[in-house]
Amino acid sequence: MAALIEQQVEIQEEEEVEEFQLIEKLQQLGINQGDIKKAKEAGYHTCDALLMNTRKKLADIKGLSDAKVEKLLEAARKLCPNHGWMSAKTVEQQRSKEIVKISLGAQAINELLGGGLESKCITEIYGEFRTGKTQICHTLCVTTQLPPEQGGGAGKVAYIDTEGTFRAEKIRAIAARFDLDADAVLDNLSEEFNVAVLITNQVVSDPSGGAMFVADPKKPVGGHVLAHASTIRISLRKGKAEQRLMKVVDAPNLPEAEASFQLSTEGVIDYKD
Ligand SMILES: Nc1ncnc2c1ncn2[C@@H]1O[C@H](COP(=O)(O)OP(=O)(O)OP(=O)(O)O)[C@@H](O)[C@H]1O
Ligand SMILES: [Mg+2]
Image 1 (tube, rainbow, N blue to C red):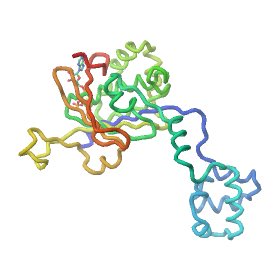
Image 2: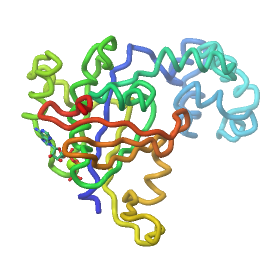
Image 3: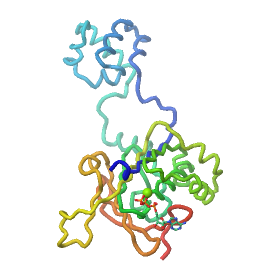
Image 4: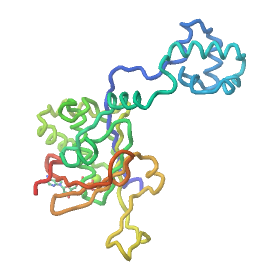
């Protein structure tokens, strides 16, 4: 089964925002090294980790008195002044600042997905053979690198190819379509931290899925395990000739809807009726 699951990870390099404050930094605020070591040994490596736990839990750290825990927390709060509850408005503002939407290469399916493949989120695309999963991955390898004004994330890409279907020539053709230097694009395909994650998945026939009523029932491989790993689930099916249809099956912020795109030498393009 593993051979059927092709996976791809899409990456953006974020601006140099330090997301975590390492616990070692507390030394600058007068916490002694020995106490920091004790907290680390108990599994607390960041100031956030300290602030996310209750005093009662922190009191379990071997060798730290209540007073010392209090001092640790006080120092951690100074290093992470924004830690704690946030209003929904702040969450909304932060999200809109941080989230990147990466173009899939065709307008209609970008709109379907609320702008494109979303960062900080795992999206799963499933569909039977030749529905365009690999083509979408190849297209995203290039669009991820475009500047944001052109629907990109100005980022790099890590492609985990479990099927052996990755083709550099395909990337060259798609890069040319977007007027990008193919060698630079290929250089940016590497391994880094993830931001937007895309998993592709095959389908199997599902004879139990109401075969009496559905002509050709199909369900994604991986069952509930993969289903719960992803935030957004998208299905693909074939249309006329090179036409493909994408459907949002499950997404927290998108309506259940469908849109067409087309497969071509240059990857995913707008559907031409
Ligand atoms: N140059 C091209 N022009 C038009 N269509 C093309 C071109 N190259 C490939 N295709 C179409 O792309 C489809 C294959 O897409 P893709 O490899 O992305 O499918 P897939 O969903 O990954 O399938 P599988 O499950 O077998 O891996 C085929 O239908 C093929 O005809
Ligand atoms: Mg494929």
